[in-house]
Image 1 (cartoon, rainbow, N blue to C red):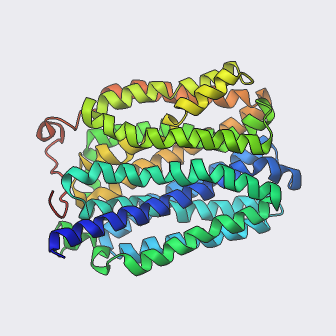
Image 2: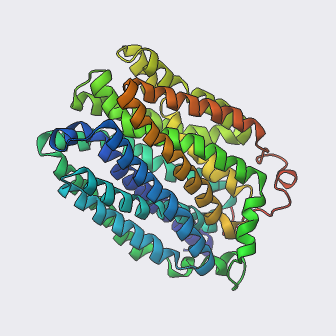
Length: 418
């Protein structure tokens, strides 16, 4: 096997590992919401408390992402960091099954969010280091597709069926196991030399704080932070309340809700692949404007006609845009806007800030749901995506004329060729 073939094989293996890691992470994060109709039969929770649990899980995610991304950019050891983050995620998912109070859920899920937040920024930067230039966008799309395939399509059916057959507690036991296996696979197959960011991208010297701070001077990065605040808050609000919405407002049974969400997941896989692909054709900026506006469709229909089959059909057909759009503003635009040596920092800054401030919308939505009914949640989501579409007009296009839109920041260096 020649060097070029070996590098391509390793690149594909990393894509598979990170596809699994992000997919099972997303499944665990979704599982709490999907099982909430069963959990509230066992643990008395208000909509406000449900919102608080999801909000603090998101805050834990938001705080850990930039912290560990900056440490990994400065110090390396990415393999060890991502392995332990995945392992701890598995353990915390497992002990969720012993929850018996609001306080227990709040603490465990906050810690779990913190362990989950470490994984994606480091995975993206490690993959950028080995991806062939023309395969980078495809590779990132495939990693993000893990959330659609595992977390949104397969997960709702499996988790809700297990919850009905056994109990919601045993569902968390089964959810925790795949992340444990994925962590062991990372330990075995990720090469140790890729644990050091600096060695590959900037020589033997570590990335300086000045280089990291330079990320804050990039216009697109700052705009993507604003987009993340709107979109991530709306996305996690959507994920947190849609199972309750479908069972309590749209009046579906728990198992039928799982089936509807599984169909939604199948279409989300399409959007997860099609959105990055189409942005290669029309440009990143037009894609963000158009798809953010399209993301308004599902929540506004569910708000106006919650029991209509037409609203459910629109939710299934285009609701996946809400989950799939983050590939562009979290990864593709940052990759085309900053050096590869600070890619993890840029990605985590966008993700972390968006989740931290966007988490407020989850808490606010829970309070609004108690005050005005669950339909108010859908209005919050629609407003957030409308704002994102408007903000996207201020982006600088990165697909064409890159040397004129990077603010003199070099492109990330990637290993391998075509």
